[in-house]
Length: 461
Image (cartoon, rainbow, N blue to C red; front, side):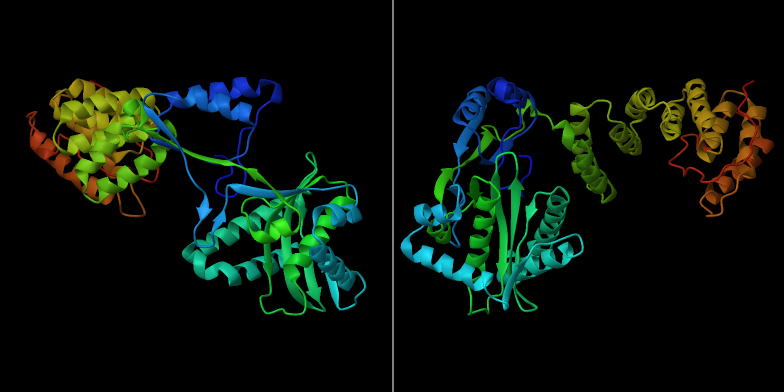
């Protein structure tokens, strides 16, 4: 879901007058996509929208289950979301929403704040925002760092960015409680000006403080601030912690569902197109590590989903060529050249495969395309020289080899190719027989030069 795993609530954003039609269409579209499991976490939407969605998602291939959201470590149910419907005044809130003991406690805490030079609350501006966020996240890290383990750095980065963005958008209420120059606690709340809601996100406090309850004081200050500014709801988001009810909250229940394919395989038995780049990266890694069966299977699964996936065509073409299946390689590189005609390496690989099949005329044409795109391609010019000579075009072949010898690369990467060209040119000068398969007619996997050199154009005789 959008916002996972940062947003406490997820749902559907659509024009209200088309909500049920949109949810129906969305579910039907999902059934056409390629996936094996779908996580629908923290769904907060109307029963009508939910019904339109689930009824149109039902399919004999799918199993839909409700799942719990209980944090067993703290015995907190995160499908329960307490919130307070705020009255028009602070006094009305104290009289209508909280018990007598809590009422006295809140009044006492706020008197201590309002009438004291010792305690104060600040709100951030652009100069103090990063400091205040650092205070809150520092307290939160001290409290939860051990439990969160190696996830902690990511959690802190995400929240820091989220709070900064919310502040920039004018949607952050962020009081910090101080005793003199010592911060005692901080509280982060998102502001929804449309629905007139404060949404409490995160709190942190100095666990050693005994003189005041920072968390309770900050919530009291925030609730009063929300009422005074015309807001109607103070939402504690997920989790049924007891203190929320002490402050007058009532519950809303959100849903958590999992949808699985009964077979355990993707719908349509294909990869999801949005994942292909990541799967290709993994497959390429397996290829380099020698896990060839695994790599080939992944390449072919990518092409089952997208037969024109250019990078996969190139990699699989290399793979089958390395196994000596030059006919398959030629077919793959022919497809690649139609998909990515601007890719010189693709034309070079096609020429190499055709050359290995003895189709030298077609190979010359493919190498020629590569040279037009990249005139300083030593591998293409070497390859075309071999095929030209096999076609009886000795002068043209020698011209291409001499062009390779004129190329230079500061990195030295071109030197093996130049040595290879020199040896073949020497043999051409000593013989006129078109029998050079033993000298590298298959072209091989040769590096592309990194610098441009003035070389004669490709000509045919």
